[in-house]
Amino acid sequence: MVGKETIKPLGVNQAALNLKIKEGEIVALIGGGGKSTLLSALGDVHGKGTVLTTTTKMGSDQVGNATLLIRPSKEDLVSVLSGNLPVMIWDSVDGEKAFGVDPSLPESWLPEATRIIVEADGARRRPAKAPALYEPVLPSGVTTVIAVIGADAIDRVIEDQCHRPLRVAAVVGCSSYERLTPKRASLLLLNQNGSRKNLEPGVRFVIAITKISSQNQNLVDELVKELRNSEPEIEISLVSSHNEG
Image (tube, rainbow, N blue to C red; front, side, top):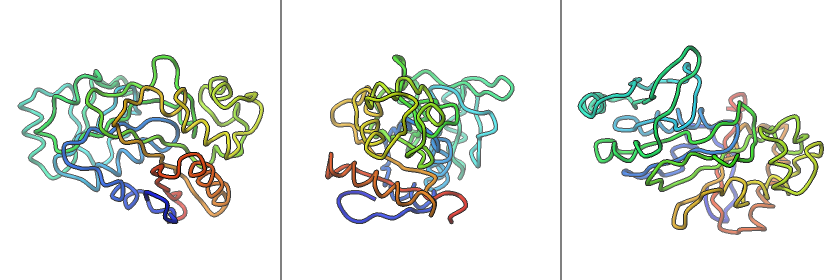
């Protein structure tokens, strides 16, 4: 997954395991399409003691295999963490929307929780995005930021495929009616006004390219090349489409 070696797409659970998230970490998922799937996979592979949450919003149907808690007390959380399943924590639920917790809260769940995975950004189900002024909503104490981009955004028209297309266009220096070429996608992912917004020194940064298929593999290869030309040591995780095994 990391470094200069050749990498290949993996199923989401294997990709989640290969991220090598350590005990005591607070991980933030930001960017575009695939965050909730990766969140769920990280919960599945690490299991007992893992807390999943969001600092923004999620679909209320995205609990996955986790045990759901709404505004739990410390005692309730400790009790549920003794089970074998990951725990999903939300502040509230209103119909199809689940509302996230204050970004200062996840840190307080340590050390009872072994790992905390936070969906810290919204993209309205679009595969790529640039952040608004108030985004991403990174949790206090974050140790790893994983920037997610769906391969189905690469070489597609920005206006059609990206959340906040005008901001994406501004970051990469083109019109929103132009395509998000591999070069432009690389700029979006590495820019301080793009996926690296609010990233503090010392925080691990990983790029996860999701929804990879045989149809877009060549474009993904071009994006990986652009990323490594800019930063040879950048950590990259490739996640195959559900339909590609």
